[in-house]
Image (cartoon, rainbow, N blue to C red; front, side):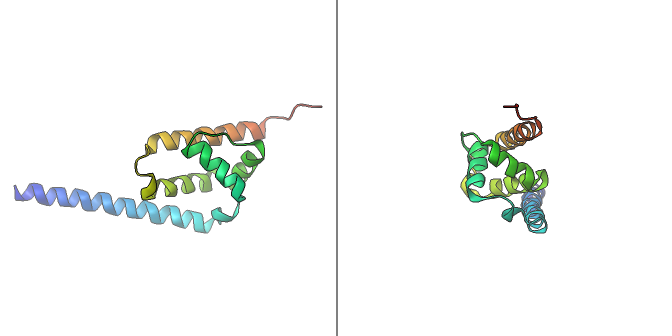
Length: 116
């Protein structure tokens, strides 16, 4: 019985340390790449709404998102998910929406504009 409690404590400790390391890793990526300075606030809000709520992102903001880069985009989404405010959201669903938003923006930016 005592070994079960020790095992449980080790599992909790391992999971807690892993979460703390992930937070530090995302923070370091964000800092090293100046991620928080690469998009304007209106586009940050559009991207957030399209990923964490229900909304769309304009082609202008897609350009800013792609300019931000996938490394920054992923780190910012993961760090946002670590915030206790979002604890009731499904991380798998948010990551899927994040990837979908990124891919949609890439396709929009990479596609040639129709000639007038």
